Amino acid sequence: MAIVMSETLPFNYELIFSARRRSVQLAIVQGQLKIRAPTGTSAEFLQQLLIQKQDWVLKHLQTSKVTIKPSWVNRTQILISGELLAFSWILATKGQVIVNEQGVQVQVPMRVDIARRDRYIEQQIQHYLTNLAEVFFQKQVQQQAALMAVTPTAVRIGSWRRRWGCCDSRGVVGFNWRLLQAPDWVARYVVIHELSHLRYMNHSAAFWQFVKTYYPEYLAAQRWLKTHQSQLF
Ligand SMILES: [Zn+2]
Image (cartoon, rainbow, N blue to C red):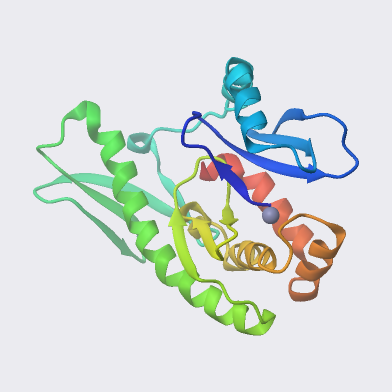
């Protein structure tokens, strides 16, 4: 399902139209605002409603975000491609990420203020994994799109806080760099899910049937994402 990125509101949302609905319903599902609306509800009407309900939405998005994440400076492990690798950091003259059989090490330049070290490490890791994700997803999309006979127009790597991927009406598919931490078979599920939206822009039974054709074990991948979500975000 396409996620709507609002320019005027401080949150994104998933919009689902249904011919059977008589009224608009807002719900927070797994940290994401979901709007169910009768088919034909105007964009202006929804925009007005969301402005009115903004406080309610923000309050509930906040409370759904209570996951405790260890700080980077205290971490000893990092998940990459579904495997836990040793993680460490050291002070150095120049900042870089070193990956070898021993694990992943981030070199933090001395000039980085102590208070900013955690953020610095996080940015380095994000940068490193985003680069890997670009190569990985380009290749995956190319392979899967050919098999599925769909034609995405571009592949983007995103850093959204609450979603794994997206697909818009122009045919652009996007993937969260955090998926690089999941095993390849899980990341591949998200590729197939988003590419399936090029055929079905919804989560109808036909959509899931299409996903299943190319990825029969999709429930296992969804379960993996659900159980590891808090580790990745
Ligand atoms: Zn979807």
